[in-house]
Length: 159
Image (cartoon, rainbow, N blue to C red; front, top):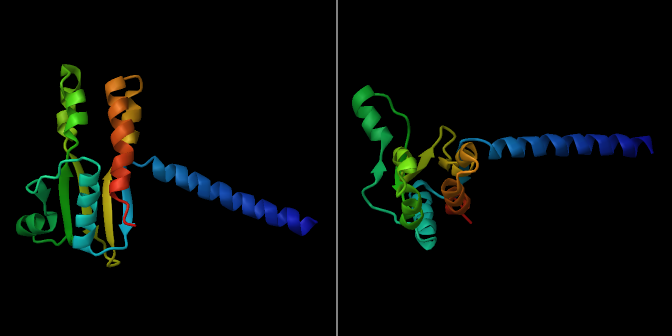
């Protein structure tokens, strides 16, 4: 009986710690996910997922910080590509209001794909749902982040 209680307490503690870590992870400003795919395949998967969700994926909206920083600093930050995408119909609903024009600074939405020193490929994007929490009661912002936030997470679905 005592063994069962002790084991239950250990299991409950473990579940509580894992639950807290899970909540903390979802509260980070940047969402990061390891990809089981190669570097180029990860980029293409995110772009195809975005297109399937109705996003516009311009070919020219991309930055290679490895190349650019190497040229300026002679330091290698590793293989990476940052690219931007837009869901224009949702963006215009927000940006047509003078009050929200300041959000041009955060648009279009950027995704990064990079290799870490462990040799694995990762993808990251801003957690716009968390950012949206800073604007509670602002319906146009809430509408945008509630629709596009889950879509951005889906874009990093590598299954």
